[in-house]
Amino acid sequence: MTETAIATVRPITEQDADSYRACLDRVAQERMYLAFTEAPSAEQARFFVKAMIQRDLPFVVAVDGSNTVVGWCDIHVPPPNPLRPGFQHAGQLGMGLDRGFRGKGLGTKMMRACFDWAQRIGLERIELQVYASNTGAIALYRKFGFVTEGVRVRARKLDNHYDDIVIIARLRPPSQG
Image 1 (tube, rainbow, N blue to C red):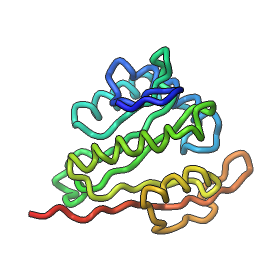
Image 2 (image 1 turned 135 degrees about the vertical axis):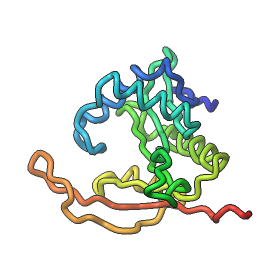
Image 3 (image 1 turned 90 degrees about the vertical axis):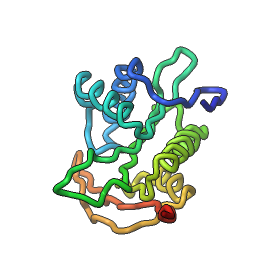
């Protein structure tokens, strides 16, 4: 658990699912940072949280003094599939913060906690897609060693505005043995 003056970063619990969904919805409705413009249903959010916890996948939240989720960071790894072997070493990063909590170091704290967890469970590759206009997030990802692997030009058109999608990843050396 990591504390700041404004929020505490800790692993998510099943009891956080509705508050997490509400935060996800607030960020989605900004229509700038996430691929969707509203959160999935409460049932879908609860299912996702429960599955991530059961599989011991990295998932932390930032909570304010009233224990309301104001941010999240997770690394999702698709369930093993015998028809698609060879992908269990890689995960997709997802994160977001409520507007009033950005720029205060919480993104760094959440990512550090997720990456420590990812290393503990043996993940070697963390990847994500980010809108090119989200320069603050890109700077944070670069700080953690992410490198650009490609750009999908004009990949999103929302509200009559185009945005490129930057495909980035962070690799750590393969485990020995």
